[in-house]
Length: 77
Image (cartoon, rainbow, N blue to C red; front, top):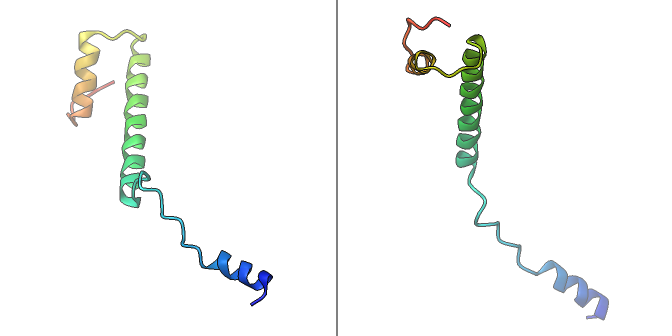
């Protein structure tokens, strides 16, 4: 075998690199994306309710926000 052919053969027979063990799986990444989207939505809703009431976090506003996130149907902004 010539030196060039031997060199080409050696390059193709090297083992593949193992995938990174610290990368989360597909389901974990999908779940994290959904969780992050829900967190952003909740933060937007809290900001909206605070904005409607002058930006002050009073006990009443806190109770209304908690009732909203607990799916209380009597919530009125």
